[in-house]
Image 1 (cartoon, one colour):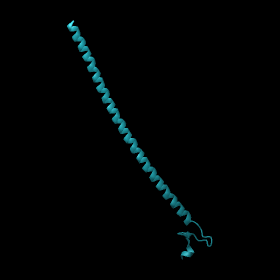
Image 2 (cartoon, rainbow, N blue to C red):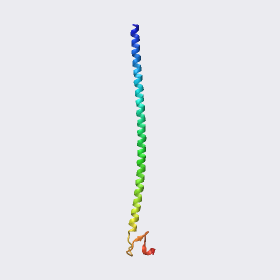
Image 3 (cartoon, rainbow, N blue to C red):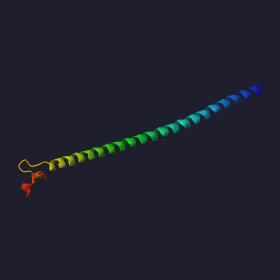
Image 4 (tube, one colour):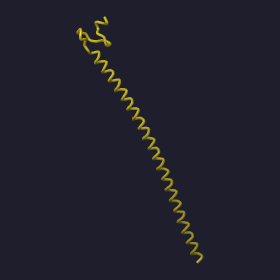
Length: 96
């Protein structure tokens, strides 16, 4: 009967050890998953920041292109008094 209780105690100890081992493994996997999630969040934030910078640069470029287009359009205007083109917003005759 004494041997029976010893075996029962060993069995219970084995179950407890297996439980603790499984819990440790689970905790380790959870920590690894949390770390991967954090890394992924950092990457997304960095990507979002780069996208914002790219959008700002594109907006600046578009503004410059529009300004340049306006200047070209203005320089191609023809004076209503004479057939000469405008230069710097003034008729070329006035400049001469």
